[in-house]
Image: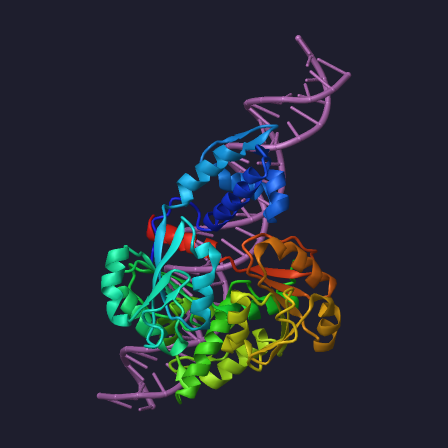
Length: 207
Length: 207
DNA sequence: TTTAATTCGTGAAGCATTTAACGAATGACA
DNA sequence: TGTCATTCGTTAAATGCTTCACGAATTAAA
């Protein structure tokens, strides 16, 4: 999926990180923060932070830093889209853990439903998430207006599920299966491949 | 953590992906594969694949492609380090799912032990992984020669656990907590931040 | 009021990665 | 055997990202 980009690709996840930190600082009653302070917290260089922020608009004050509330609003407006409904495919160990993950039950991200082959799980409720049979995908996706699917099925079924998701009209897939999936260009994928993350980290350690 | 790099940073995860695909093709009895074919499977451009592979040595044959076994051996020798022992911190939902994840019980990656605060879990065995109290970290890490720790505790305890891991001599941390952790320079971190992955995907969809 | 110190914002320079362009090698086939 | 199509490998160009360098704005304090 090619995106017509407004901002450099890599500033987006950083901006999302900044938002989270700013939120935290706000909750602790802080009003202003400098790029240097953010750098200490996030591990991102201060210049990088200033450059990132400058993509979104001038909001800092020399000698004072950024007003936290204003900066947070600016970043959210630029990068944090409105609430998104998500559907989960696969209710094995990983699926269950995802279903219980508190960050996926917020106002911004909400798991609206789950799908599973195993008939023993169908009809159950896990953490408020109803489990449906795969025949219901189209209707449930339509009803919930879900945009994103999480692929948490065993890797043998990865491509099959991806095809189902595409057919149901989902626009993005988070793929936890350690297998590349092929999908049409108008659907975005993000692969989260834990084995590869592991081995990459190992390469960093053991040069 | 600064690495003295042998290969471009981004070719490493791709090489790990190629290894997996090659393995799969081998199992299906294939002997040769071209960069074009790998491109179709992985979604990486064929030129990129040839360039990546050329980092490791000349191994392809014009008009034929790569001998799968030879290529796999070459990549593994370059990028796939020997087996690594891992320890898991936190046996909540996420920790349990990780403990049960089959890819973490292979010859290459093995979860050697887990640590948990909740006394009700201590002493239990989950999928062959023994759960210890936090006091045992140093001795267990030493005994198992673990190099990497997985941080799967609630985010409030993230920094505390990271400190424990560093003190125990671990050299790398996979951090699932949605919180930046600060650690000394000689320890490598990889953050896996599902919320940020989600919102980033959403930005890709909704440009 | 002036000076000094701090911090933002930005154009330019520096790196890293990807893509393009193309020669060279190889095997298939007439 | 010679020709042709295919595929690798590599140098060069293009792109994208990060870091540097520095001016401008602002506050604190002399």
